[in-house]
Image (cartoon, rainbow, N blue to C red; front, side, top):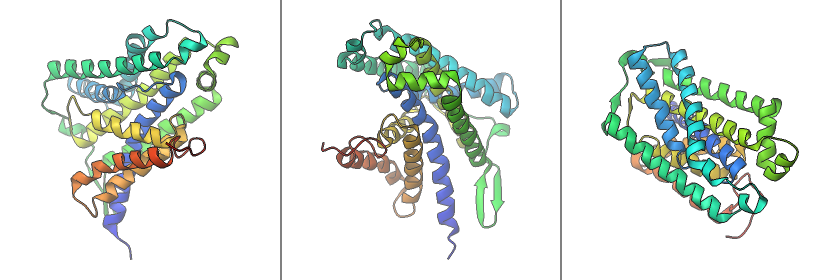
Length: 304
């Protein structure tokens, strides 16, 4: 028997999962080339939403232009983040320094500090209250398909995510920059020895990952109708969990696991109260760490 509510929740879960996927790719790309977690990625998501609001209120461009300009803002944010929070810890280029545990921990703490600073600055400038998106830009127009009702924002999330994921695959597989990113992720010292400019490659990785995160932020802001300084925290945690589940450096794994998280959260509300959905990601994280320490799409199983 056809269950319209179940299908509705499934679609909702896929749209949520695609947002997590765009963010998880940013985590995965940066971890792949630097072997560190960028805990400021949630703030990139938030900056994308606020950049979209500023563009709408000051210039009132068409939606397509808003997204393109936010992508540019995301790229600049990634560049600035790499220069301020990550590059100072890469002063030494020998293999021992690149694999140093102390350097990874220092970089992780630096990104965490940058996350707090950026969030506090935004809160001082815009206030801690929610900022409302103008009515004409909201992506909440209902679209009826049989007994199921969709919002226009869900179609934008599906379409934009699909385009960006396909563009990313093309970039990584068919372009010089993409091949350089894959080489550095596979063997940083080997890439350096064969003449690849690793510094430019790392910068490009930050810019690409931040573009995806900023795009996710502005689309969700337009869909939900309100933004606030701490809006990137929860999606950032969910995207991090998806990255861990996917095996840390597997883009395909991160995307698949993000979709699993999104669908599981949406379907959980069929049987439990709304608040229980947020626990799904943490449950998946615990199960992954216990039974799949290298991730579902990672290497062979090990005992914790």
